[in-house]
Image (spheres, rainbow, N blue to C red):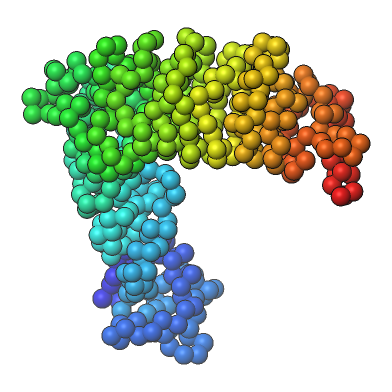
Length: 479
């Protein structure tokens, strides 16, 4: 009796043709193990006959003849068939790369498809393990046009193997000539599984067209009358989303991005184009968000609107440009915000934070591409006092650009980690971080200093950093 692994025969009986090749590394690693007899089909004999068949110097590839002469393998069953199913399932799940979606069409070199190509028993276990099929990546840029017709079938099969488990779906497309085809396909994928989506990552110019209200009136590009408009879709299990391409928010008309997503907490939007007057036209569950990243620059007054709608934020990242002055409004307390990153392309005005309170803020990262700062421009005594109160809890501070360094460090005495850019080192002297003759120095609890210097930095700058470190070390040792 012979057992097969895919199309490769692992065992042989008398008179069969000799088999070699792909089985060599498999049996070479398992041949020395004394496997227990299972129904008399697999057993090892004692003594010198228990050996690796590929250690035979006279016939290294003659597996069939060696099996018959030594009695190692009586019936030709592979040892991997005796690995318990529960153990195989655990191994299969651990083989999946963490945080990576799996291609719908690939060369079967990565899990889970590679696991299905080993043998029939492995394929059966893999197909019956829903956890292997909960993450899916469709990259339209690498799929031949000839395979477009089978994509819906493959997508349906993949999702059915995941049973009723939530799905992580990634879709990538940047080939403009196939705009209509991929648009219809993307809408079909999302609308058919919206109730199961847990994570959505879309990098496609088609997405903007799918969510527009005027687009819904016509049912979509090439869509039938039975298709659901985007505004009616529900995402009851969606927890996170990344939209990498442009979203044009309509003026005086709502743009329903995720109108019903009660579990949505994390979202990243790379290219949202808001109208000048208001950000409220974009329909999102702002109040329940814990993580929000907006990559494209926002007018400061639009940022005020959005930021005020997200009181439950824990992590926020924003790119802000000069906008309309905002009148005094009601204060908002961010009782959960621990990390805030702001990129500013104009001189920093700390008054943009004046209506916000950050009682638990631990990390503040601020970058600017404007290299001119004068304390007299924005840092009045009243603003300074308020800013000091807002950032007092800070433990980690990152500054990129030119800043009033002494002023900021004085505002955050509890900082233990400081990250400074090259422009900061060039524009300001680090002598303010030296031990001031036994007096209280700035940020006395500093433990980590990160300085971003270019390769061609001057010796003077390096020496200044070294002197500052020596001064801090002497200060610590004298205590």
